[in-house]
Amino acid sequence: WILLNTTLKPEKKVFILEVPRYKLPDVRLLVLSTLKPLKHFFFKAGVLILPLSIILWLLFSFPRVNGEVVPVEQTYAGRAGQAVSVLFSPMQYDWKISTALIAGIAAKEVVVSTLGTIYAVEDQNEEGIKEAFRNDPNFNMGVVLSLLVFILVYTPCMTVIGTLWYELWWRWWLFWVLYPTLLAWILAFITYKAYFFFV
Image 1 (tube, helix red, strand yellow):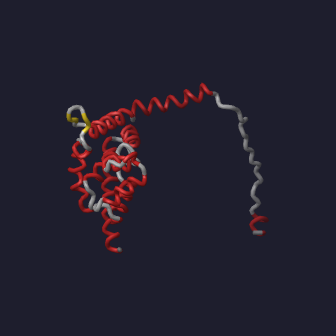
Image 2 (cartoon, one colour):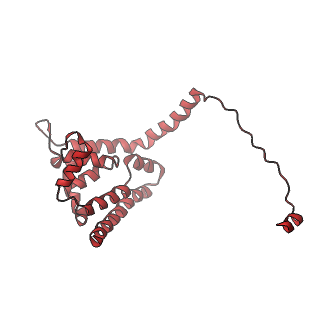
Image 3 (cartoon, one colour):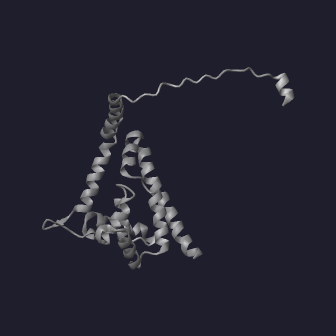
């Protein structure tokens, strides 16, 4: 250390940092700088988000009999869930879980509320949903753990899907929509099998 300091004397440089004056933000400038990217997002990503929202609403609201909403299993979303449940049969997911996963495209947290609706839990309170799950013989710890893994990993919510649509080339967009879902299926399957292997 002494040798280096005597032979290689570094130049002493003064570091000056100028700090700007703190002041209240200009409201007009703040609104303009916020509205521009917001408008940009709604007109670009919103092109996909709005149709997706409408499609999901239609799937869960129709068909109707005498103007009345039919039970969830008879809606288009319920029928789609029954069709898709074949893909999830290795993890023991029934049509209820499959339908909730379709609704989860809107937002991941919607999965639980959709399950609450399907089980017709009053007020969709937490204890009521827990009780409904306990009474369903299809729900076991292996299914629950694998479902948690699937929900965490699969296709992001439609806001992200809309943003990706705007930001990426359509093939990359398709990749980032399908790849997480495939990965989620594989990880959920491994989790399900691992649980029963070790328990």
